[in-house]
Length: 105
Image 1 (cartoon, rainbow, N blue to C red):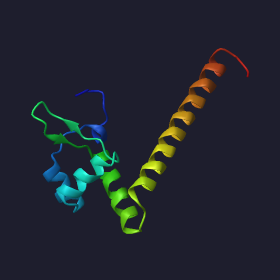
Image 2 (cartoon, helix red, strand yellow):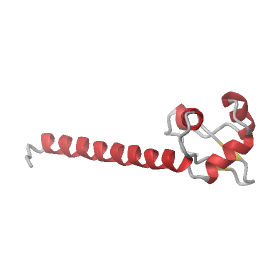
Image 3 (cartoon, rainbow, N blue to C red):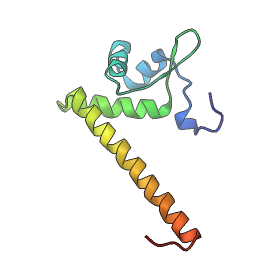
Image 4 (cartoon, rainbow, N blue to C red):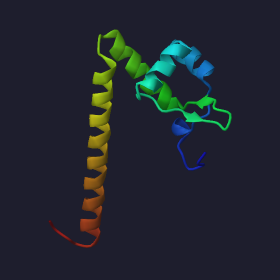
């Protein structure tokens, strides 16, 4: 586990703790993992470990499911957001490099 991660992103909680925090059954949490909506780390013994960011993601997923959104739609939206975040980050870096080196497009 990397020590430079934010406390929100450190994978330190077991599925039992996550179930208690979120109110979701362990089976539902595993199902969301199967659907590739959540990505816990695994210890050497195979125990799932989750972060506070994972708790937030699970709560968002649960709320969308309650609203009738299908898991494939949630995954599609999560992919779109992740792609947009990467694009925004790349634009920011390009802007900083252009400003630093007095470059223009």
